[in-house]
Structure formats: structure tokens, C-alpha cells
Image 1 (cartoon, rainbow over the protein chains, first blue to last red):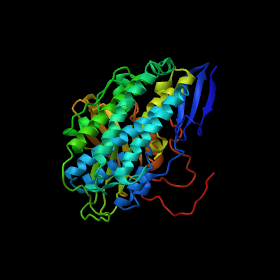
Image 2: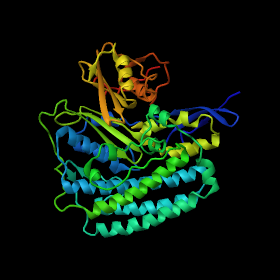
Image 3: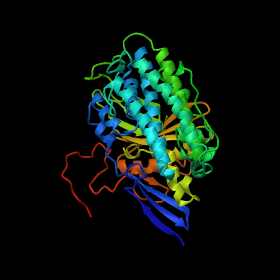
Length: 363
Length: 122
């Protein structure tokens, strides 16, 4: 006989407001039905009624763990629709800031996931302390800790401060040491191993069919990273690797993100080293573009959670339609598949490994 | 790439057979005179995206479900049905995806009134 239990919508491990209706046979999960939409704000509709550069403020609230990445994806879509060229220096600065944002986002994910899988509060405290240093660096560059709104068409609101390179170098050296410490904290820990290895396995073909994206896709053995496959900004000139692992379980997903953090450190270092001189400031905010009617732009960006695609139909003043494919949405859609046949206690380990932000799912 | 509604599933199957086996997004745009449904597909080996568009008459809004071709279509179709009122044929009628909307209309249609008085329906 099946037991049906309800989890959420308000639950400490759902990372937002997510309701799960779980059918159980004993302790084994038979079916999970995620109920989403508690945070649905209708950002796509709101965007149809705002001028182009009023919208980034809304965009940043979509993924509040990596706000700059969403903001950048949106600004890049407008740039593509309106044919604006990004300045060379701004290309490098965007890469540097986006990679710092990726480190901050992955650190938050690591801490909360460790918390979810077995009350490993040490890891949570460590990652939050280190994430704060990344945020302080971003604050140094943009003036804000969380919602930066620092992108303008063709560039940025302001250039990096003069001593940014030194501060970043100190942080990156520290972070590299800390990543090794995380590895020694977690990868020999039987609690962590038990809850991650061979739990929530997703095969290569299933990953493709379910359309999962980002680290979840790459942990299942498909090497597809927008930064490599459709390079934008300075990514094609900088030296880094897209990371892939083959097992597709929680541990692979953890490992892919750890490796990505090392690569991000590499990218920021090299970006700062090769940062070209010149002007990085973008266009003023007020903007009406004639002849933009029904111009279509579709832009993909590799966010910390995976691929975000924005599909925009332009109008002279405001988007006629802005459709967003957000990474957490499609990764959550795969939850039922991942959790079937697993133990109830592992459900949150799997959920944690997907790195969800509910605001990003619901929009 | 435009296609007709009758040919949609056939075209999707052809594209999937041709290597575009990763579904990126299904969405729709309301152009008032017609509603366009957009399928964004990807060929990961060739690193190539395909946009497949179907125009629908606003008085006759439906498309056939593509879930059996692309399992990833599930949530996108549900979201589209809810936001645009486009009926999805050939799949079992499920719960709405995002929210229980007890007002009238479909939020992402251009006819959706912003400041209309809030009406409850039973």
C-alpha cells in the first residue's frame, strides 16, 4: 500500500517555497510531484510594460543567488536585438564579475546542500564566510552586495576600482586553499559519501531527453557548456576547461561544481591579467530604438545553475515579448525521474544537488 | 523555420532524427492577429540551434503534445497552456503548473487586462 505525504510549501530544505507530494512504498519513493508557482510574479508580463533598462531590476530578483548572471543574460539579449557592440574592456570585466558571481553562487549551493544531507553545519558556516568575501569583492566593483544592476548596453555602469586586482588576487589565493579544505572535509566523510555516491543517478541519454542543463547535464557525461560551445565576451580568448564527469549521481554533480570553481578562479586571474585598457562604460539608460519592431533575439548564457535562454521580440521602446528559459525550472522537472526508487531521506540530498532557486523556477 | 500545425509532430520527429535531440524551450508569442508557438531545439554535436514556429489562429488555439518525442516538453507545455490558453492535445489533462488562477483570461496574452476589476469565479 502506498503512503502519500506532503512536504512544504514551507520547509527548510526546499530552498524557497516548493511543495512536494510524495508517494511512498514503505521508505521507497514511488512518485514525487512538485507543485511550483508559489513565487510566480509574472516577470515576463511585467517586462512587456517596462522600458528596456527598467527591466534589469526585475531580472535580478529572478535568481537572487546569482543576480548578475541573469541581469547580464537580459542585457545581452537587448544588445543582440538592437545590434549594440560591447566594448573590449567591458567584455573582460563582465567575465571577471560573472565568474566571481559563479563562485559565490556555488559556495551558497555547497553550504546549503551539506546542510540538507546531514546537518553538516560546519561546511555551511565555512562556505557562507567565504561567500561573503566574494560578495565584498563584488560590492567593491559595483557598489552593491546583492542586487548589482551594473550592466548597461555596451558596457557597465562603472569601471573596476583601481585596487581591485590586488584584492581579487588575495581572495583567489585564499579561495583556492579553501577549496582544498572543503574537499578534505567532505570527500572522506562517510556521511557525505553515503548520501551522494550512487544516489539520484541520471544516465547520459535520460539527461538529454529530460533536457536538464548546466552542472546537472555535465555530471551525466554530456560536455555542453555555453561558455565553450557558444563563446561570448572574452571566454574564447581565455584559457579554461569545461568540466564533465560521467556517473550522473549526486557526487558527480557536487564534483562538477567544485571543478568549476577552480576553473572560475583561473578565469578571473587570467582575465585580470589580460584586462585591456580603455573605456568600459555603457550607454545611458534612456533608449528608444527606431525600426526595432519585431526584431527577434535568442541568447543563451551559462549561469551558475545552467543555461538560461532569453527569447525576445523587440519593439522600439520595450520588449514586445520576453520569454525566459531558466535553468532551475527544467532541472526541477527532472526531480521525479531522479527520486524514483530512492529512499525518502535521500530526496533532499537529490533536491540539494540540483541547486534550485525557486524564484528562478517560477519567475 | 515555419511549419503548419498538421505537420508539426512530423517535423519534430524529423528534426530529432536529424540530431536535434535536445529541447531547449517551448514558448509562444501573441501577435494579436495570430499566436506563434516557438520550439527551440538543439543539435549538441553540431552545436546548432533550430527554431521551429507554428502560427495559430487565436480563435482555434491548440497544438499536439510533443511529450512522447521530447520528454522535456512536459513542463513547458503545461506552462504554455496556462499562460496562453493554448490547448495541448494528445496528453492527459494535468494539474496546472504554476498557480491556481481564479481571475479571467490568460496572463501572457495581449488581451489580458491589467487593471480590470478582480472577479472571482467559482
